[in-house]
Image (cartoon, rainbow, N blue to C red; front, side, top):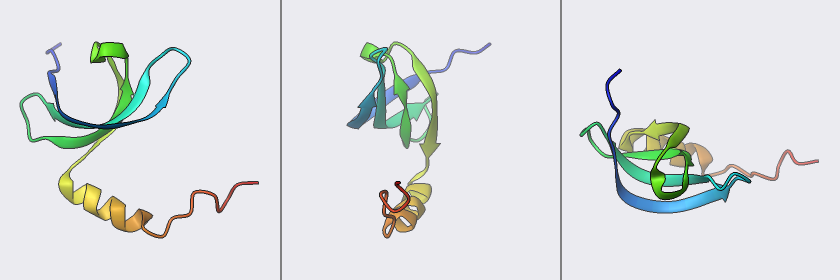
Amino acid sequence: MAEIKSEVVKEIGILSTSKSNWNREVNIIRWNDGKPKLDIRDWAPEHERAGKGITLTAEEVAVLKELLADYDPYEFED
């Protein structure tokens, strides 16, 4: 299996930290020398391992921002 390369181009922020000390992070990542993309995933301390996540192109980020503009995260809380 080919090795997957990742380069953190810019750290945007941490959304949460799990009990196992992994952080759910938002970053700009370059995967396998490709174009940098917005990336949301869990990372082990020091970024030595990555969990499953989602990677979005600039166009997808723009659409997501529009979709979330009127989103109320507390609308469906009990």
